[in-house]
Image 1 (cartoon, rainbow, N blue to C red):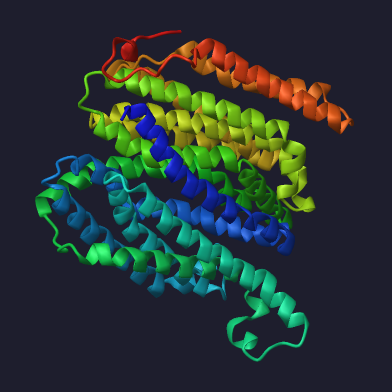
Image 2: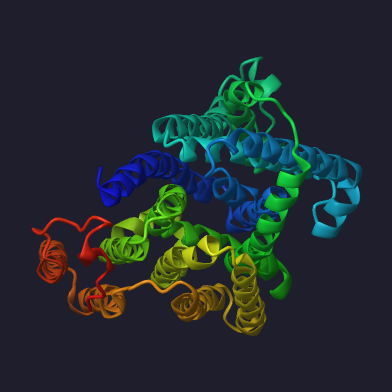
Length: 498
């Protein structure tokens, strides 16, 4: 099978599970933004920001290290068991520490009396860290259907429990309250039900993967563990820096703004960030398929040309998503409650920021394949420091708008730095002018629609269709779609065409 089509098909399967699942999951946002006030939704946003940081710490680069060291099929069982033992041990230690210090931690965070939130999240993080390796193994073994099924079960349970506790139970409680309802529902729990639903879903995922984990001997190879740790720790630093870029604004906004306005703005920012769901989902699902794909093609002498082609079509797809979302913004706005819509002006900024993040993921292959993860870590640390500086500079003055623009500027800076470092250490013949042109064209067409569209809905729809047709026609013309995609062994695969 042509490797590009193989990547596309696996991205489609991963994407189907992730997009369908995440879209269903994101359908909780209309529920949450109508059930909870922005201040309460700000609590959800803040807690999941901490989760993003801690999950990187608890996996400490071992997911990517697993792909790196499991390329040797004979060594793969030892890599798998070593990674499982390591993550299980560190996760158990983490849960123990949180259990011991839950009260002082809750007091520092301003959640005294809600220590159980911390314990729930400790268990969620531990289970998700351990199952990261079995999920990675499914990707390595190219079993996207099994991967997708388990992910969808997790998301389905989470959604069902959210609907049950936040929608069904309050409706039943207003009528003749059944006796059994008092056993499973307490209105005072509030946003805690969002967290409890997540915990139950994580437990189910762990149980689904447990048979596979138990079929292997849990044995830690010290030499292999040290090698994986040396490879993974720079990725941990880079991962923490990357999460800082994405989450620092959400973690710090509560402390940079004053009074009730802090959680209010945090709630609006978190909700509007999720409006850019389509771009985020595409980038995430692409990563699921791309990372094992890139490693599996590393030995091919024509791999650089293949990577350039992947990047090229990735940018075309992201540009089309950006344009589609912007053209339909008046309808997508109803995704969040009316109180939250004042922040929709940051959505185009966040869409482009996520596009750049996806470009950075593509570019990062140069340091992963060359075992130069240290350089990748330094690059990410630089981005994190810039994130912190811009957030402290802009959030007090501009609130969540400053946080959105800081995200865009940081990702743009990292893309530029990674491109030039990659050109030195692992040259890839990217089609630079086209890679820049398609996103700029999407932005220009979206701005054109905003200037010309009016109150006539029929005209607006015709204009939308015309703009999309223009974009598609340009792609067909410039890319000559009728020609077959080059295989990695062909001369055209490595040809630099601008």
